[in-house]
Image (cartoon, one colour):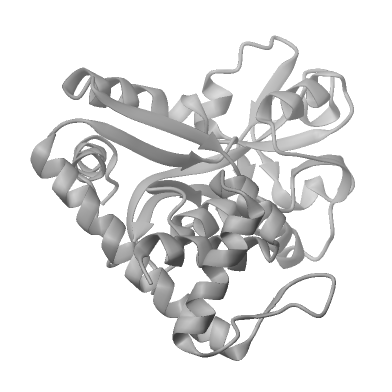
Amino acid sequence: MDIRHLEYFSEVAKHLSFTKAASALHISQPSLSKAIKSIEDELGVPLFYRSSKQLELTDAGKAVLVNAKTVLEAFYGLTSELSDIMDLKKGEISIGVPPIVGAAFFSKLISQFKEQYPSIQIKLTEVGTNKIKQEVEEGILDIGLICNIPGHSEQFELIKVLNDPLLLIVHKEHPLAQKAKVHFSEIENQPFILYRKDFSLHDRILEECHKFGFYPNVVCESSQKDFMIELVEAKLGVALLPSRICQNLHHQELVAIPLDGSKINLELGMIWKKNKYLSFGVREFIAVSKEHLFVK
């Protein structure tokens, strides 16, 4: 058994399909099947149930998968560390960013980092907080920006980078547009444009509504702040957006109003996986982030 065979096994376990795993690994399906059979023969146990239409891990397969992940993480950490030693200040950093955050919060930091380390590539992926946590845990992302920070985490290291109040945005002709502040309870009967379910702010806003004894009249759920803004501009509803985004609104038809009676905020944190080797680039990016973004 070698590292490559463990990679093959982990990929089949991930997809529960030899066809999909072979495609992801860019090898032929017979070669992949032969490698898995080789592992099973060496260990003396079957790793997959093959009787049903979809593969299933056996109990032995589940045990091997847990240990395979540990071995592969250690191996990747070793190869990354050796790469750092041999070729400092190069590499790639994969970062997950919620669409609601986007460039409004992050572009200046990336620009400063690229000035210091122009040879390090930064790959940004826009997905919701819940997906970011999953992909940091799985090692797909090196770093993630997440909304609504947990008090404690067994899986992640975390620093707080922002605490930004949400404002209510309405069309300038809306009855609430003339108010200096809007009490949160006044949202109850408004057609409401909400974040999609895979965004943590979706749950946070619903929790706040529940606190005030109502469920919002949701007319649309979206992952794109620009689309949410366009819907409000078209008089189709109201929405809650972080104040930093509201400050950069260049829509004369819209009004951003502070909320009264509620302290609902966009809490932004940066996470990375505990007990995982961090490449030179990732370590430096975290250091630069702490210097420029860290919230005490």
